[in-house]
Image 1 (cartoon, rainbow, N blue to C red):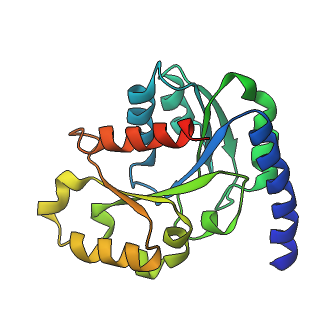
Image 2 (cartoon, helix red, strand yellow; image 1 turned 135 degrees about the horizontal axis):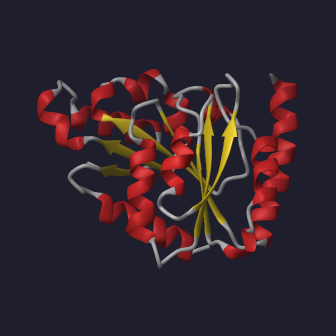
Length: 211
């Protein structure tokens, strides 16, 4: 494991320099399958259209279904299929970036493979990580899968419109998140209702502007 991560981290540093040299901010977007990552991404791209130049790297085990959804937004997208791998790594990102004109964008969003474990262990050269947790997954996930939440700058509590139909304890989840990461930024969103999306997009815009 040490050898694998060590080799990955070397490439991640090369990626980080490449992104910095081109003035690109990179967000590693993580979360479980079905948490709403792709829908959140679609809404984010619509919100930031005409304001920030964005490209997307889509990570998935098989198919290009998510990439096809993103392509319909008009944003440049590159698909990575891991053929069973549970995460994206730095070499995959480095290779995918050969198909992207980094000088033409401000923000690169990497939608990682749906998983609450492996993606957090691999540095891809990003500026920051964000994790999506849907209300339907349960409020126990931050403590059950602590690394991904400790590593993330922001946590998006998605599908907040379904809160009344679940036993999800919102206050408990927030307390667990801030215990794991005291400065984590927490957003409550509903992509179907539009709740919290303006705050999320404003925060993301500010991250790009501050780069």
